Amino acid sequence: MKTTFRWYGEGNDTISLSDIRQIPSMHSVVWALHDLQPGVVWPVDRIQEVKDQAAEYNLGIDVVESVNIHESIKLGTPDREEYIENYKKTLRNLGKVGGVKVVCYNFMPVFDWVRTDMAKALEDGSTALFYEVDKIEGVDPYELVENVKNSSRGMTLPGWEPERLEKIEELFKAYENVSEDNLFDNLAYFLKEIVPVAEENGIKMAIHPDDPPYPVFNLPRIVRSKENLQKIVDIIDSPSNGLTLCSGALGSNPDNDVPNMIRTFKDRIPFAHIRNVKVFENGDFIETSHREQDGSVPILEIMKAYHEIGFEGYMRPDHGRHLWGEESRPGYGLYDRALGIMYMIGAWDMLEKLKRESKE
Ligand code: DNO
Ligand code: MN
Image 1 (cartoon, rainbow, N blue to C red):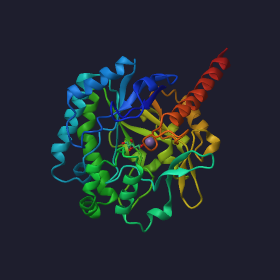
Image 2: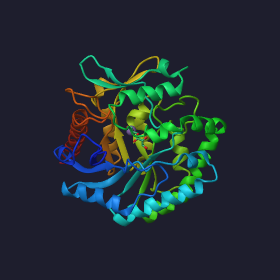
Image 3: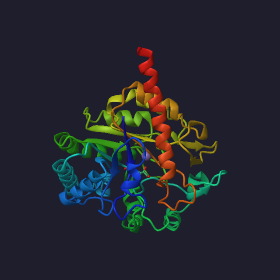
Image 4: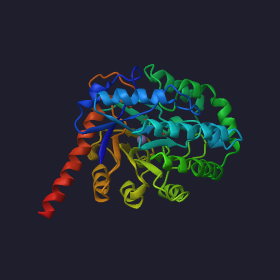
């Protein structure tokens, strides 16, 4: 298992590479060129620049999260060809620079992840991302967009970039006639084009599940259950057609058995997100610390499942709470994610120790 930490890039993150370097066990950063819109080719020199910056701190750039998918690819409109070609060029450019092993992406229409409150106060005085079912049902999505803008502390959030939000009305209209089957076919079309290029460049594609894992605003959702994941890995039987197994996204639906998914898809998980959420009876959920007892997701069983399958992929703490007055990008402060790492590797190191001892 290789531990990683998301970094938004020079001038775009309150957390520096030097901060990240000081977290125990760091192998590499999870990064992206966040200023480039979906559909744009990532230039070699921009990729090289990030590689050099990270190398100064002895960190790799092994995982990209994400090279985002242009909406035309998800919608399956004729101009998708151009954007698929651009995606291939980006993969080739990543291959040219070298060092990138995994490219995470998602196939959620219009929005990436959705929450209703970016700073919900918890009993202990920290704040966290919160999803309230009542605030979504019957709510105008434009209101939600305003809410997110106002609570993001002036920082852009992945999936909520202003350029994307400007086109929201148009996008909702375009999806009116797209069923889940259509969306799946469009994903299959994309993967059949992309996976051979990923293979040639030593890259594993890794789709991130829908967050939350059910339809929001009547938009189709196709990455939210074990059956969905099975269908996706079956599109092409290649390690380059893989999964980002996000315990928090999938775990927001109590029907999803995450340890079972890990054991089932073991060879197809190049990238793991570890996050705990507390799910309430009415479906509301709040992000909690990584500790198993603090939420509804069986984090220790998840670590055990990864250990059991001999996981050699990349793992990162996903979102964290905001602690000790830290003014960070929502979900992406330093402190709680660093605590999360210590919980994850604490569990992992203990599992390794027990395994060694059982052989003695
Ligand atoms: C939010 C993240 C998502 C994730 C994308 C992957 O913080 O979990 O934005 O990066 O869905 O493509
Ligand atoms: Mn995630």
